[in-house]
Image 1 (cartoon, rainbow, N blue to C red):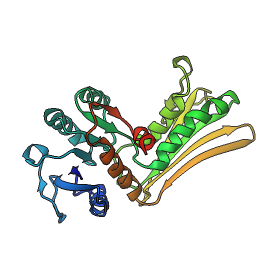
Image 2: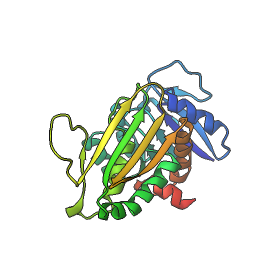
Image 3: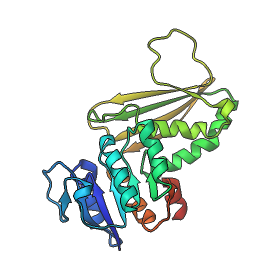
Image 4: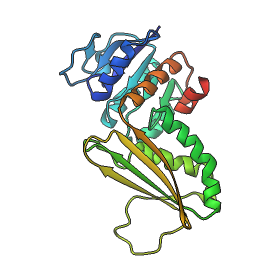
Length: 255
């Protein structure tokens, strides 16, 4: 039985994961961490990780970028593997994740769903074909009106998957806003647009636009449970792993 700490347990995703773990015989939440109350949990909840005196095999984080620094320090100090799901991390924080992964197992993914991570693999395969044919590449992502970061981490990860197919001399530039320029669209750019509204869980379209034809790869998340299921799957995978930086691709390949 994998013992897990839920970091950000009283948030929406924390509660969805709590419900999924309750139905899974292979994993249990032994403690939660969240400075905000308002939820009743079947496990003890602490205001911060330093106050938590319960040991676990893995910590799953769905808190927020502001809490990640303390989380990384705690994981490094205690040697606890971490599934890091918070998005909107700074460049310094991402570099810190890599540094900590040299001492303890870390799994970071911009999106925890099976569908999105499979799409990333597909994009790496098809991008050179469309690029050779002169197709332009655009990404449009849509999320609920409470999402703080923009563009989404998933949109960036999808763009990165396209760029992974090319060498350093042929990488695409990411463009987030064209309002300040008046010019023909350059070939070697990926436009990334963000929509915020209502209760959209997460929509991502990767558009390859060519001469008289358009090919679109789409992913729609209809509930947050797809991310929660992936996070739980990742937690069970990461428990007991040696130091290193893992991704959802490793989880998928292990199945």
